[in-house]
Length: 308
Image 1 (cartoon, rainbow, N blue to C red):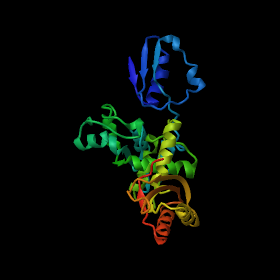
Image 2 (spheres, one colour; image 1 turned 30 degrees about the vertical axis):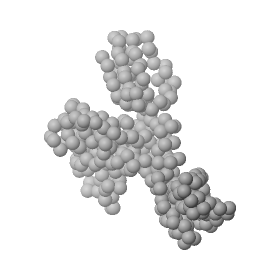
Image 3 (tube, one colour; image 1 turned 180 degrees about the vertical axis):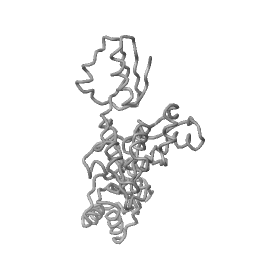
Image 4 (cartoon, rainbow, N blue to C red; image 1 turned 90 degrees about the horizontal axis):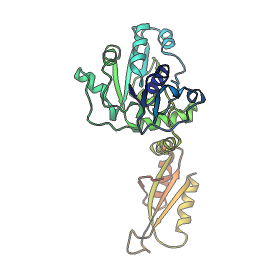
């Protein structure tokens, strides 16, 4: 038999089928990030006929409190549990232990097969999916778990990829935790909820992210939060102009990380050349201060797309 999955299910199937003597093949999607296989996985017995095709083992679920602890500790009437990956088991257990708990499922906006299926009242297949949350990038929800999700989920939310990027940066900076994009769905969903006077638990799962993806997500997060931005100004092509622009930025505590000087925006170079400046800032308010300072010093700054 074959088993195909992006992470945890493939791992469990590998252990289960390793105890048998017949041949099995476990396949992981090609876009699954490359992550090291720990020694305990490497010690498994391959002599029993298991073929490992491009399987990348995810880290174990990283929730600090189990669903059981969450369900029993939260008093009735002020409880919300948010589940992303593996939502069927978590929602079922939560409801069995505390029927009053509200369980919210979260999907990527670009792969909302469960939301569509619940709306249609049947398992529905999407034409295509597009999301950075590769662990939940599926077109069709499982037919066997679908009834449980219909019974035990009180609500389905979707989050955009941009929200996942910002959530990843929040987790790294504020909590020093690495959580994969699919595991971050529950954190990104918090901004869609009224959490005042409620005890809310976002269940985090998985840290299956390679360093290339991690670097890209951090960079995009900094850009989305205006911690890095690019501004374009036109200035005469004469000595001292670049120093003057740099002085204006320095007085606002802006940090220049990249400069692009384009002399071909006008046929009259003495009239105008373009200077594109990529800067680090403390956030949106600091970005506005820098742009206002350039404007007050006679320039016409224009925010443009940042390419790092």
